[in-house]
Length: 266
Image (tube, rainbow, N blue to C red; front, side, top):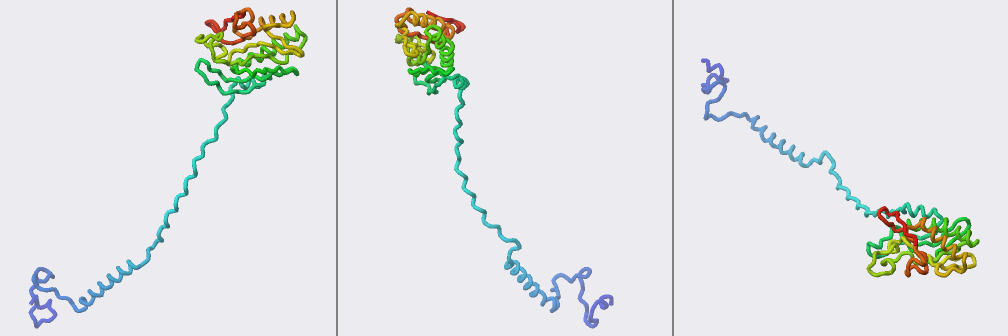
């Protein structure tokens, strides 16, 4: 009787249940016609939603193609910077000496010239003294030549000869050779641009040569000039020193002695 109360139709026997609320294993599940009709509808809705998702446009716009990179500008080489002038050349430019800087002459290392220049003229006190041989010398030596010319050579001419100097014959200056023109000898001071050879001095209206002064006054002038040169140069040689210097005054600033300050004046 307890089973009959759970059945919808009391006249028919109720099926035995396995467990509580569960059908006996092996019996088919009952489905209502309404449930069977819902299954195709659900499947159709799922397929429709999936198709709509595939057909729908993306929610975000596609990114544009990356912009092509601009070509790198060609490399620009830095402009060459001017080589600064040495302090010697700067001093020389203020000394009243007209000169032109030159490239170092080709030759062995023993004949290296520091800051080579060509002497052209020296101006001051309204007077210009020319160097027509345009000797090639080191810049430091050019300073010494300018000082000697301005403070000794020119004023001594006025004192002894009552005339002004207009030009000085110096020879070429630089020459890569052995001393006294002897092959194989030690390199002369000329080889480093540290020497000149004064052979003549032009004055207003006359010209005096070292080898043959025109009169006694000119001889005294040249002799005084030769002795004064020892205050500016390390070596002073001339007529009477040796045969190699019989016709000119050799003036150089090559260091002598252990301390480099010795003098040879003959």
